[in-house]
Length: 210
Image 1 (cartoon, rainbow, N blue to C red):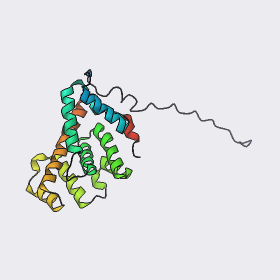
Image 2: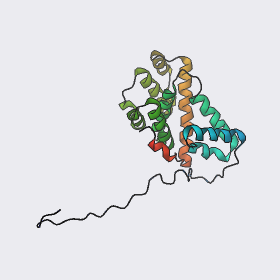
Image 3: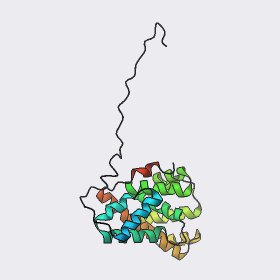
Image 4: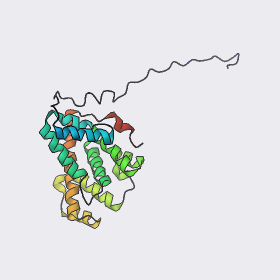
């Protein structure tokens, strides 16, 4: 209630702002590339994604205009990110985010930032990785790994034996160094394709593991 000398001020509610990502699950890229019929193998893979994740990642849909390219992409991704390695799945996702931050790739920062949050159980780590991994309290091993991946991204011509020696002193084997380089290289490729096509991440990534 207001007193006799007070004037009640009615506030006009602000109109709801439309979501910045409202159409990201429909207009996945800026290119007009009609999807091909899925092969049985890819159809089964999409079904597995739907079962395990609850959705099919938009990057897979973006590649669906060419089944051979999509199959090659899936095979390379699964080998680098999910197969046996001296690098943990979290470490590989951290490389993906650090490289994508250097390249300012919206798709990969959203998608793989969510993966870091989920695998680490630490939403703050996911945010730090997206914004500036150097601000995160990382182990010597993690910092050496990410410094190498980012240098390989930004200044590959400057990578030399001292950089590999720092990785070895942090506990990485030569096979691990290969895997760090391969993951960093893969995401440099995907970042550029995503940026060139204005690829949009699934909206559900924004809410995951917060």
